[in-house]
Length: 246
Image 1 (spheres, helix red, strand yellow):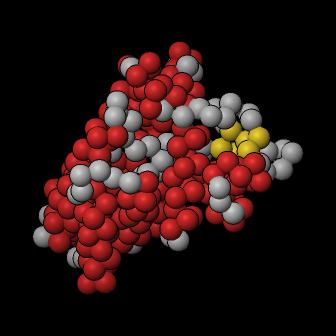
Image 2 (cartoon, helix red, strand yellow):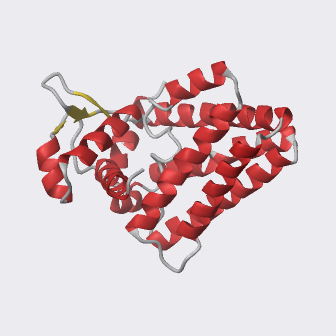
């Protein structure tokens, strides 16, 4: 992903998750481009990505608008994602890891290492990690060679906050966020190692465990609404609607 496009996607996703736009509010390209000091093309591409992630939807008047979602939707999609990714990792481990795919996964690991293993992450580092994380998970899903897995994952990617990078850590400080990302990336390393060794059961367990960080962030936001609101106020759209579960 081109650098400016990656930064715009991270910035726009951050605004959405911080509650800068009310549910139902229309998101227009030109005002957003002015706000982010970017051209319209990366904004247009970012909006399309956010729609794919289920955070926004097409507006009857044209363009996009914010959508509502519940904690039940998010939690359910995250759990199913873990099961599917674990299964995909197991298939890949049992079938054998092709050399080209191994190189691409290791490139992801290297990119992630450079992004998170430094004193302080910049916005560009954050964007690099997001891009790498999406690419890493996509490689494993497609590497499984299972059409049903691909179809289910495509459906899950359209659920709010269920795609790999649409819900990154939301702790009380960027320093804590970086530590969570380091932990997640260590899991990436462990997962690749298990796949390379043909350890199907271990790869499956690691794939399922990996989504626990997203689950813990969801629980954190629901249990600490005031603190979470300082970092990611838009999550009120989830917690406020959680009373309607059932």
